[in-house]
Length: 98
Image (cartoon, rainbow, N blue to C red; front, side, top):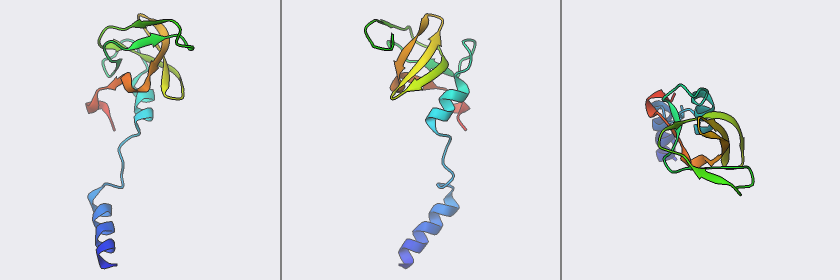
């Protein structure tokens, strides 16, 4: 009992409870312009239509603007076209995270 109390107190005082900004919120906040360097689609990511019938690979660091989200995919606009990419392929500048 005392150990659990001490562990809880240590967590509260260490700042662990104050979690970092959720990834989805950071993506929505940082992916707002094609003229920025804070958010991009990873090299080789497939930019696909909604049904994933037609896809093309993007070059590295393709800036992206978020249009929407469905399941585990983001609907994005890039200078190479618009389409859907896997959430795993969205990259953010960690120094801009809150």
